[in-house]
Length: 96
Length: 233
Image 1 (cartoon, rainbow over the protein chains, first blue to last red):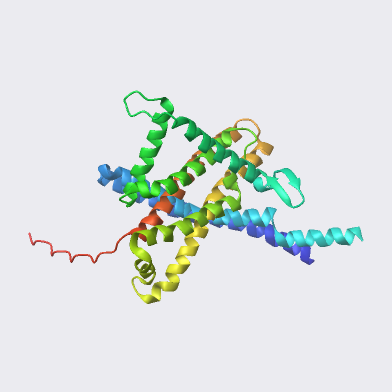
Image 2: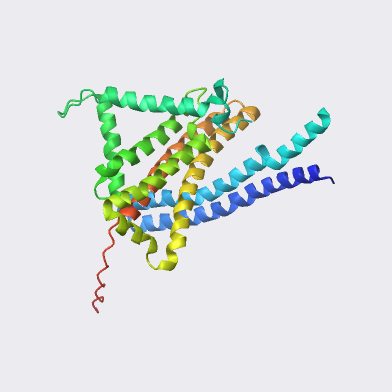
């Protein structure tokens, strides 16, 4: 397996794995956060504005880790510097 | 596959490029500035007022209430900065309904610029509130060993703000683009609605986080009174 194939395989596999794991774990965390928020809403309904706002802020912070994984996957698929380097070398070799 | 409005070039001259991000950002600024100027030309304090003035009042009072709830006791000092952040990011997301428009916050340059504004504004507000010495002392709270961690947390908060907004906006646009090539009939409309919802939530999150950082920097730290022992029942 030459280096360009290796780069392609590693990029694709890593992109899929990054999105897979990066979506599972924040989802678990967000589920726990929402569950606790629902419990406290049931116990103190008149604090619902504060609880809801804090819940959304917390969810956005947890979501941002999923977004980081998504951005890395996108970079690996669409803006991969190693793959661009390989492509540039291949077109140079074909042009000669 | 277009990753960001940076790659939509409208006009080019040498190395000066007028790309989608710049055009849409200036368009949003024009809409916000000219719109507000037109609406606030004849402000009325009686019960009878124009619908647009009512709309702006609802928006401004809602933002003021949110800033107060976060813990900043004089919202009029901060509403210029925080309100503008919220309105810009929210309008950038809302205008996605216009065909041919790409939200400029889908480009890392815009979100990095907004995050840098917050990064500069937090010490400015903190120094204005507590003086230079008082603000610098917050970096060595609670002990001097925390100094590198506090500095790193400042930088990583800024980075997180930028990447969070960029990731959310870019992923919305990209999902719609991918779906248009797969199932072009109803599903992209549903995803556009979801993109609108996440855009508004992200605008709210961005400004609330900026408000929380400013509140943390301007909080005057008094020594907490010792809690009284609970009465034995």
